[in-house]
Amino acid sequence: MVPKMTDAWRLRIALALIFVVPGFWTVNYLIARLYVGHIEAHMLALLRLSVALSILLPFCWAEIRRGLPLGRDEKREFLLLGGLGMWICGAFGYIGGQTTSSVNIALLYAISPVLISLISARLLKEPCGWVQSGGVAMALIGMLWVVLKGDLTALGKQEFPPGDLWILVCVVSWTIYSLRLKAIESRFSNLARLALITAGGIVVLVPFTLLEAVVLESWSLTPTGLWYVLLVGIFPGVGAYFCYIYMQQQIGAARTSVVLYLGPLYAALAGWALLDEQPQDFHAVGGVAILLGVYLVNRTTSAAPRVKPA
Image (cartoon, rainbow, N blue to C red; front, side, top):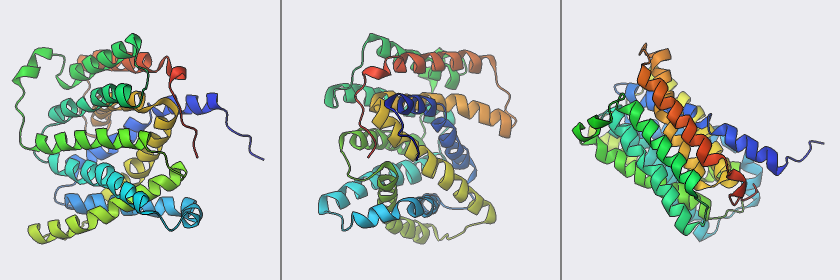
């Protein structure tokens, strides 16, 4: 018999995942810069979810079948979460990545943890003391230091191209998704809930994928595009979303959102390893500040309200 996992171990796993999830998302960031010419944005998002659902269903179909039929409110909830977290944060991000820079994307995504922290403290009654507030500020400064290459005065010089509007919609959508995921309880386990949200995202994506193909007159999917689909389906599609749900239940929405600050650091390391982009001094300085901020935000995690996994 497998021993029951204690709350302390759940907490340790959630804290460790803070440093794993950004790596899964970095795969998505890299593919967003490489997919053009191999597959269209909505098709990439749709096939990504299809791969993810095919991986998830064998492990949770029996539970889902026992819970069928779904009530009207449950159907609406899974469609809403699928639209917010899978359609908008998927296809819109791929579209925005074509016409904006990684600096602007990182700056805009930095808004999400701030929004989540503030709203969580108000609506979800999650604690956010001075130490945690200082950690958020430290992580934000570190993130800015990385994306602005060590020159904070460059912030006012940034020009925001049209693609930033797509990314801004993603930021707002992810904020709502994260808060609703935490606030609304589900009778399904983490795995089954993720599968149902993924299915909701597929339902939402199908008509927009067809519309995209008709308007662009493109149904192309190259062998390279197929590899991209598999990568984003496995890592950000399954790994990142499941870990995010688990982390929110253990350490809260505000603290979980801090993983977004690790994105620029991981992207810099991935660019160095895969695209031969050499790391600079500002990567080291910003990375230290980001990691220190993550530590400060999570050092009092035991006081956070937690919902035990179903």
